[in-house]
Image (cartoon, rainbow, N blue to C red; front, side, top):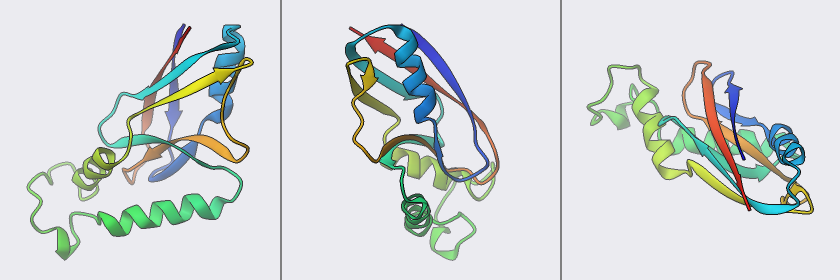
Length: 139
């Protein structure tokens, strides 16, 4: 069974879509299997992260901003790909450092997430985007 989630981001940061994934698995009727999620873009990624304290998401976003600053930062003067804006090549670097696919076991008709885990699209571009995540639930 497959579906595609469309996630509208508000700009850089983590955008949770756990409830959409849970609904897809529930509607599939499958009690067990392996759920694969794959993002179809090169300037964002996926992650499973704590969903209880929003400070976790803010800190992760800030860490990656410091790790890979905008191309107009003097430390990034060496970048050649700058035609799509100062956040584009840094977004590609961040996506190369983080996963673009996730595998999650399905047990008793639910993704086997831990108590505080949520599924996020990690947007690395500054402006809003519409992103696609393909989900495949196998037996």
